[in-house]
Amino acid sequence: MKIKKEIETENRIIYYLKTKDSNDNTLIIKQEITNICIYIKDTVYYLKMNNEFLPVLKEIFENSNIEKIGYKQKGDYILLKQIGINITNLKFDVEIAGYILNSINAKYSIEDLSLKYLDFDIDEYLTITGKKTEENNQLTLFEAIEENDNKELYCTYAYCIDKLYYTTIEKLKETNQYELFEKIEMPTLEVLADMQWNGMYINKQELIEFGKEILNKMNIITQEIYEISGEEFNINSPKQLGVILFEKLNLPVIKKNKNGYSTDVDVLEKLKSEHPIVEKILEFRQLAKLNSTFVEGLLPYINEKTNRIHSYFHQTVTATGRISSTEPNLQNIPTKLDLGKQLRKVFKAEKGIFIDADYSQIELRVLAHISKDETMIDAFNNDEDIHAQVASKVFNIPMDTVTKEQRTQAKAVNFGIVYGISDYGLGEQLGIGRKLARQYIDQYFDKYKGIHNFMEEMPKIAKEKGYVETLFNRRRYIPEIESKNFIIRQFGVRAAMNTPIQGTAADIMKMAMIEVYKKIKENNLKSKIVLQVHDELIIEATEDEKDIVKKLLKDTMENVVKFDIPLKVEVEEGKNWYDAK
Image (cartoon, rainbow, N blue to C red; front, side, top):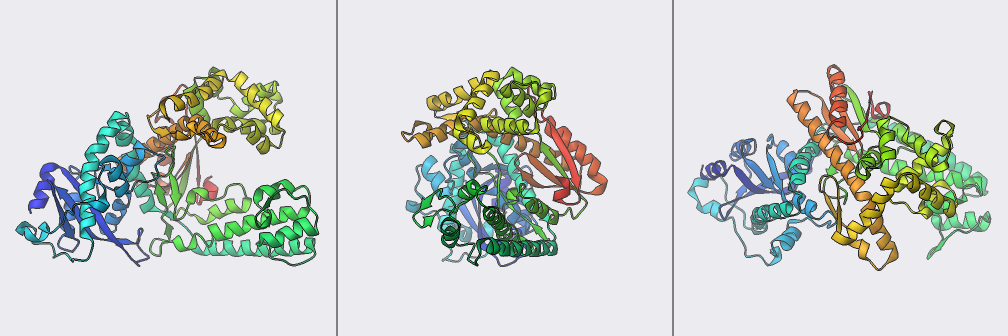
């Protein structure tokens, strides 16, 4: 077949998959491929998916010598796997390229990328049709194309993917980001696709029972609130709640809005010490959110065939390079509320045991390395408790006299500094005055001069260049730093301070995931990566591979980069997610 031979000669396929929605609840992605557009030598072939074509497509996509160039290939990986095709050699995804070139853009459609990098407006395109598929006698396997399926648009997508491939490669090289794209982002794409395919097993009945337990607690708290207030009212109504709190119980009014009294979380937190009803209302709201978001919210996502939740992991959402999760967001399962933690028990290791590997204080370790601060470097190299050390330096006391409360305060200062916290923000967080918070920050910078110099330098670099970078050349453009609006400008300052730290930590996690994934495949292990939550990686391991996986995780994650200080990984295990954490 001519088209197959041309692809094999080029060792490259530039393609776009056209899909339609499916009602099949056993699918990981509820879509099916209807057509594929393939661009070869200035011609776009618009081919209809059918049983005769599948073996040809399978041979092309599973050939590891053929580079695959497309758009949103993470989805392609799963869509193809659903029809028995294991795509290999994912070489170039133009969406990922667009994201790397400008991570704050948030617009990575083919239309947007074509307009930006090709100066080509698809709405005004000169139609490139797929009619040659009918005219070419080499393509007798393929059915005739319907005239009403908007094929010109999808053929234009394939054409633009080809042009964007060449244009964005050059731009990635110009900005010194091609290695980041090729060595980190593209391999991460396959890892994330495989994670989504694997999913996390969940015991549906236990989740339902957990929901009943929450509703029972909500009913009890509701009656307690009615008893305290002396009447029944709609707790979910801010207006009715406002009347109870500020008119009947005469609590101090903190804030008003256009609808009357504000009863948001910040207001209620400030009123906690004023009346016992406030604590009950806060608890009621936490339970209500837990039920709606993490019980009722999770149930529709349980796959009928696998009994697993196959969350979608996003690679092009955050400005810092962190991975995010939606449909549903498994990275947002509550950790502070005890009942929220209990929710993790319904996530089971169906085929053995969960191994949870968590980087210890990775952002602070990155900060120590980037800033070259000798005091913090020494602390990590001597395996000291970094928060106790900060407490000792900030409060001018011997380390062995640091109290639990002082350590907690020092921890808030430590992580606050990483995120460019203000004296007002730190004061709010610690419940202290702004003046004392400013004193803590000043004393911190006085003792950690390398960090202070780094934090002073980053906004200057952002202002001079328009961007800051991670250690692996990931750029974040910060136009906010030139804003005339003080609040927006301060956001830019904080982003300039934080991005090199958080972004580098995100890069390290991606590199670790790639290496772990590679080693699992190389060693023919049955264990699978099922979840990534910021600094944490979870593998569902078989019992017989448990010890191998634990060693593999710790060794790989701790040695994926060489820093002035060691990276540390804590590894736990458990039959469910709760026990493994």
